[in-house]
Image (cartoon, one colour):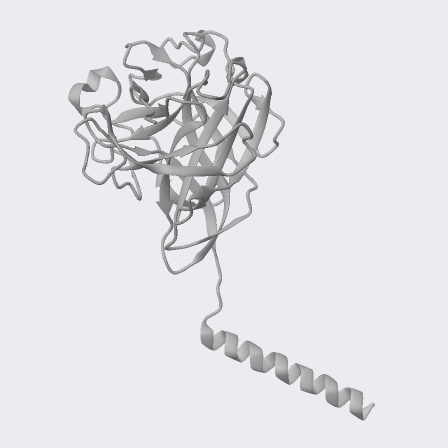
Length: 304
Protein backbone atom coordinates (compact mmCIF):
# COMPACT_ATOMS: atom_id res chain seq x y z
CA UNK A 1 0.00 0.00 0.00
CA UNK A 2 1.43 3.36 -0.98
CA UNK A 3 1.50 6.10 1.62
CA UNK A 4 1.69 9.54 0.11
CA UNK A 5 4.01 12.08 1.57
CA UNK A 6 2.58 15.09 3.34
CA UNK A 7 5.04 17.94 3.45
CA UNK A 8 5.07 21.57 4.47
CA UNK A 9 8.15 23.30 3.11
CA UNK A 10 9.69 26.02 5.19
CA UNK A 11 12.53 26.68 7.54
CA UNK A 12 13.16 27.35 11.12
CA UNK A 13 16.19 28.35 13.08
CA UNK A 14 15.82 29.71 16.52
CA UNK A 15 17.35 32.31 18.69
CA UNK A 16 17.17 30.08 21.59
CA UNK A 17 14.05 30.32 23.64
CA UNK A 18 14.60 26.64 24.32
CA UNK A 19 15.69 24.68 27.34
CA UNK A 20 19.33 24.11 28.22
CA UNK A 21 20.91 20.87 29.39
CA UNK A 22 23.54 20.60 32.10
CA UNK A 23 25.28 17.86 30.09
CA UNK A 24 27.58 18.37 27.07
CA UNK A 25 26.17 18.22 23.56
CA UNK A 26 27.11 14.82 22.15
CA UNK A 27 25.40 15.17 18.77
CA UNK A 28 24.50 18.51 17.22
CA UNK A 29 22.09 18.29 14.32
CA UNK A 30 20.12 21.30 15.45
CA UNK A 31 18.08 23.77 13.51
CA UNK A 32 19.71 25.75 10.70
CA UNK A 33 20.67 29.40 10.88
CA UNK A 34 20.87 30.26 7.19
CA UNK A 35 18.61 30.24 4.11
CA UNK A 36 15.35 30.72 5.93
CA UNK A 37 11.83 30.55 4.53
CA UNK A 38 10.62 31.70 1.14
CA UNK A 39 13.15 34.55 1.07
CA UNK A 40 15.91 31.98 0.46
CA UNK A 41 14.35 30.85 -2.82
CA UNK A 42 15.95 27.70 -4.20
CA UNK A 43 18.46 27.70 -1.34
CA UNK A 44 15.80 27.10 1.29
CA UNK A 45 17.42 24.88 3.90
CA UNK A 46 14.49 23.43 5.86
CA UNK A 47 11.58 21.12 5.49
CA UNK A 48 9.22 19.21 7.75
CA UNK A 49 7.67 15.80 7.18
CA UNK A 50 4.94 13.45 8.17
CA UNK A 51 3.41 10.59 6.20
CA UNK A 52 -0.16 9.95 5.20
CA UNK A 53 -1.91 6.94 6.67
CA UNK A 54 -2.81 6.00 10.20
CA UNK A 55 0.26 5.31 12.33
CA UNK A 56 2.93 6.30 9.79
CA UNK A 57 5.49 8.89 10.86
CA UNK A 58 8.92 10.33 10.04
CA UNK A 59 12.20 9.89 11.88
CA UNK A 60 15.90 9.42 11.24
CA UNK A 61 19.06 7.99 12.78
CA UNK A 62 22.29 9.10 14.46
CA UNK A 63 25.61 7.64 15.59
CA UNK A 64 27.67 8.87 18.54
CA UNK A 65 31.46 8.93 18.29
CA UNK A 66 33.01 5.46 18.47
CA UNK A 67 35.30 4.39 21.29
CA UNK A 68 33.06 5.15 24.28
CA UNK A 69 29.79 4.37 25.90
CA UNK A 70 27.63 7.39 26.70
CA UNK A 71 25.06 8.18 29.33
CA UNK A 72 22.43 10.23 27.53
CA UNK A 73 20.19 12.34 29.74
CA UNK A 74 18.53 14.70 27.23
CA UNK A 75 17.18 14.50 23.67
CA UNK A 76 15.69 17.47 21.82
CA UNK A 77 13.68 17.72 18.59
CA UNK A 78 11.28 20.17 16.89
CA UNK A 79 7.87 19.90 15.32
CA UNK A 80 5.14 21.92 13.66
CA UNK A 81 1.52 21.10 14.46
CA UNK A 82 -1.15 20.48 11.89
CA UNK A 83 -3.77 22.82 13.28
CA UNK A 84 -5.79 24.12 10.32
CA UNK A 85 -4.74 27.71 10.97
CA UNK A 86 -5.15 27.60 14.75
CA UNK A 87 -1.35 27.70 15.22
CA UNK A 88 -0.80 30.71 12.94
CA UNK A 89 2.12 33.02 13.74
CA UNK A 90 2.81 36.69 12.95
CA UNK A 91 6.56 36.32 12.25
CA UNK A 92 7.83 38.69 14.91
CA UNK A 93 9.78 38.38 18.16
CA UNK A 94 6.71 38.53 20.41
CA UNK A 95 5.18 35.08 20.86
CA UNK A 96 2.30 36.65 22.76
CA UNK A 97 1.30 38.42 19.56
CA UNK A 98 0.29 35.14 17.93
CA UNK A 99 -2.99 33.30 18.19
CA UNK A 100 -3.43 31.62 21.55
CA UNK A 101 -2.54 27.97 20.97
CA UNK A 102 -1.10 24.92 22.70
CA UNK A 103 -0.32 21.50 21.33
CA UNK A 104 -3.16 20.09 23.42
CA UNK A 105 -5.53 22.00 21.11
CA UNK A 106 -4.64 19.50 18.37
CA UNK A 107 -3.17 16.43 20.07
CA UNK A 108 -4.15 14.14 22.90
CA UNK A 109 -0.84 12.31 23.18
CA UNK A 110 2.51 11.64 21.57
CA UNK A 111 5.36 9.13 21.80
CA UNK A 112 9.05 9.33 20.96
CA UNK A 113 10.77 6.14 19.83
CA UNK A 114 14.50 5.35 19.96
CA UNK A 115 16.40 2.12 19.45
CA UNK A 116 19.13 0.24 17.61
CA UNK A 117 18.90 0.93 13.86
CA UNK A 118 19.81 -2.70 13.14
CA UNK A 119 16.42 -3.77 14.52
CA UNK A 120 13.11 -3.69 12.67
CA UNK A 121 11.39 -2.76 15.95
CA UNK A 122 11.85 0.56 17.79
CA UNK A 123 10.84 0.83 21.48
CA UNK A 124 9.19 3.81 23.13
CA UNK A 125 11.59 6.14 24.92
CA UNK A 126 8.99 8.55 26.32
CA UNK A 127 5.21 8.78 26.01
CA UNK A 128 2.97 11.60 27.23
CA UNK A 129 -0.67 12.65 27.36
CA UNK A 130 -1.47 16.35 27.00
CA UNK A 131 -3.22 17.89 29.98
CA UNK A 132 -3.65 21.44 28.63
CA UNK A 133 -1.63 23.97 26.66
CA UNK A 134 1.83 22.48 26.18
CA UNK A 135 1.77 20.58 29.49
CA UNK A 136 1.74 16.79 29.72
CA UNK A 137 1.46 14.14 32.41
CA UNK A 138 5.14 13.20 31.94
CA UNK A 139 7.57 15.17 34.10
CA UNK A 140 10.44 14.29 31.73
CA UNK A 141 8.79 16.14 28.82
CA UNK A 142 9.19 19.90 28.37
CA UNK A 143 7.61 21.75 25.45
CA UNK A 144 7.86 25.39 24.55
CA UNK A 145 7.45 27.80 21.67
CA UNK A 146 10.53 28.51 19.54
CA UNK A 147 11.52 31.42 17.29
CA UNK A 148 13.98 31.94 14.43
CA UNK A 149 17.01 34.19 14.50
CA UNK A 150 17.33 37.33 12.40
CA UNK A 151 14.57 38.92 10.35
CA UNK A 152 12.60 35.66 10.16
CA UNK A 153 11.08 34.45 13.39
CA UNK A 154 8.50 31.80 12.51
CA UNK A 155 8.18 28.82 10.25
CA UNK A 156 6.81 29.54 6.77
CA UNK A 157 4.99 26.73 5.03
CA UNK A 158 4.44 26.08 1.34
CA UNK A 159 1.19 28.05 1.61
CA UNK A 160 3.42 31.02 2.59
CA UNK A 161 1.57 31.34 5.88
CA UNK A 162 3.61 31.46 9.08
CA UNK A 163 3.16 28.73 11.66
CA UNK A 164 4.17 28.29 15.27
CA UNK A 165 7.05 25.91 16.00
CA UNK A 166 7.60 23.86 19.15
CA UNK A 167 10.76 22.55 20.76
CA UNK A 168 10.33 19.26 22.62
CA UNK A 169 12.94 18.31 25.24
CA UNK A 170 13.07 14.86 26.85
CA UNK A 171 15.17 14.85 30.02
CA UNK A 172 16.27 12.56 32.90
CA UNK A 173 16.57 9.71 30.41
CA UNK A 174 19.50 7.76 31.88
CA UNK A 175 20.18 5.98 28.57
CA UNK A 176 23.42 4.11 27.98
CA UNK A 177 24.28 4.19 24.26
CA UNK A 178 27.28 2.65 22.53
CA UNK A 179 29.51 4.89 20.45
CA UNK A 180 29.78 3.68 16.86
CA UNK A 181 26.31 2.10 16.95
CA UNK A 182 23.59 3.70 14.84
CA UNK A 183 20.29 4.46 16.60
CA UNK A 184 16.98 5.30 14.93
CA UNK A 185 14.29 7.63 16.26
CA UNK A 186 10.94 9.20 15.43
CA UNK A 187 7.81 10.72 16.97
CA UNK A 188 4.12 10.04 16.47
CA UNK A 189 1.24 12.26 17.66
CA UNK A 190 -2.40 11.30 18.12
CA UNK A 191 -5.41 13.60 18.02
CA UNK A 192 -9.07 13.29 18.90
CA UNK A 193 -10.03 12.51 15.29
CA UNK A 194 -7.74 9.47 15.04
CA UNK A 195 -9.29 6.28 13.71
CA UNK A 196 -7.70 3.14 12.38
CA UNK A 197 -8.24 0.96 9.28
CA UNK A 198 -6.98 3.73 6.98
CA UNK A 199 -9.28 6.26 8.61
CA UNK A 200 -8.47 9.75 9.85
CA UNK A 201 -5.03 10.62 11.12
CA UNK A 202 -3.56 13.74 12.70
CA UNK A 203 -0.34 14.98 11.10
CA UNK A 204 2.59 15.96 13.28
CA UNK A 205 5.45 17.41 11.23
CA UNK A 206 9.00 16.58 12.33
CA UNK A 207 11.50 19.26 11.35
CA UNK A 208 14.44 18.54 9.05
CA UNK A 209 17.19 20.37 7.16
CA UNK A 210 19.42 20.10 4.13
CA UNK A 211 22.94 19.71 5.50
CA UNK A 212 24.65 21.72 2.74
CA UNK A 213 22.48 24.82 3.16
CA UNK A 214 21.74 24.81 6.90
CA UNK A 215 24.74 26.88 8.02
CA UNK A 216 24.71 25.15 11.43
CA UNK A 217 26.31 21.80 12.35
CA UNK A 218 24.36 18.88 10.92
CA UNK A 219 26.33 16.03 12.45
CA UNK A 220 25.63 12.59 11.08
CA UNK A 221 23.49 13.78 8.17
CA UNK A 222 23.48 11.39 5.21
CA UNK A 223 20.67 12.85 3.03
CA UNK A 224 18.20 10.12 4.04
CA UNK A 225 15.65 9.82 6.81
CA UNK A 226 13.39 7.03 8.04
CA UNK A 227 9.75 6.00 7.95
CA UNK A 228 8.04 4.12 10.81
CA UNK A 229 4.59 2.82 11.66
CA UNK A 230 2.80 2.00 14.89
CA UNK A 231 -0.67 0.69 15.70
CA UNK A 232 -3.39 1.92 18.05
CA UNK A 233 -1.27 1.66 21.20
CA UNK A 234 1.59 4.17 21.21
CA UNK A 235 3.25 2.33 24.09
CA UNK A 236 4.01 -0.59 21.78
CA UNK A 237 7.20 -0.64 19.67
CA UNK A 238 7.07 1.00 16.25
CA UNK A 239 8.11 -0.81 13.09
CA UNK A 240 10.80 0.41 10.72
CA UNK A 241 9.20 0.86 7.27
CA UNK A 242 12.17 2.04 5.20
CA UNK A 243 14.50 4.92 4.33
CA UNK A 244 13.41 7.98 2.41
CA UNK A 245 14.99 10.66 0.25
CA UNK A 246 13.03 13.92 0.10
CA UNK A 247 14.56 14.90 -3.24
CA UNK A 248 11.69 14.65 -5.72
CA UNK A 249 14.11 13.19 -8.26
CA UNK A 250 14.58 10.23 -5.95
CA UNK A 251 17.66 8.11 -5.43
CA UNK A 252 18.06 4.46 -6.47
CA UNK A 253 17.96 2.09 -3.53
CA UNK A 254 15.73 4.22 -1.28
CA UNK A 255 12.15 3.52 -0.27
CA UNK A 256 10.71 6.35 -2.30
CA UNK A 257 11.61 9.96 -2.83
CA UNK A 258 9.84 13.24 -3.27
CA UNK A 259 8.20 16.24 -1.73
CA UNK A 260 11.14 18.62 -2.07
CA UNK A 261 13.91 19.58 -4.51
CA UNK A 262 16.78 18.44 -2.27
CA UNK A 263 17.56 15.80 0.37
CA UNK A 264 17.04 16.35 4.09
CA UNK A 265 17.74 14.82 7.49
CA UNK A 266 15.60 15.21 10.60
CA UNK A 267 16.95 17.53 13.29
CA UNK A 268 17.93 16.24 16.72
CA UNK A 269 20.27 17.13 19.56
CA UNK A 270 21.61 14.58 22.05
CA UNK A 271 23.14 15.56 25.41
CA UNK A 272 25.11 13.41 27.85
CA UNK A 273 28.59 12.35 28.87
CA UNK A 274 31.07 9.57 28.17
CA UNK A 275 31.00 6.62 30.55
CA UNK A 276 34.42 5.33 31.58
CA UNK A 277 34.93 1.77 30.34
CA UNK A 278 37.96 -0.03 31.91
CA UNK A 279 40.68 -1.15 29.50
CA UNK A 280 41.20 -4.95 29.25
CA UNK A 281 44.49 -4.67 31.18
CA UNK A 282 42.73 -2.69 33.91
CA UNK A 283 40.08 -5.37 34.14
CA UNK A 284 42.84 -7.96 34.61
CA UNK A 285 44.44 -5.96 37.41
CA UNK A 286 41.04 -5.45 39.00
CA UNK A 287 40.36 -9.19 38.85
CA UNK A 288 43.72 -9.99 40.46
CA UNK A 289 43.00 -7.46 43.17
CA UNK A 290 39.61 -9.03 43.90
CA UNK A 291 41.18 -12.49 43.99
CA UNK A 292 43.84 -11.21 46.40
CA UNK A 293 41.19 -9.66 48.57
CA UNK A 294 39.30 -12.93 48.65
CA UNK A 295 42.43 -14.90 49.64
CA UNK A 296 43.21 -12.39 52.37
CA UNK A 297 39.72 -12.77 53.80
CA UNK A 298 40.04 -16.56 53.69
CA UNK A 299 43.34 -16.38 55.60
CA UNK A 300 41.78 -14.17 58.22
CA UNK A 301 38.94 -16.63 58.65
CA UNK A 302 41.40 -19.54 58.99
CA UNK A 303 43.70 -17.64 61.30
CA UNK A 304 40.80 -16.49 63.45
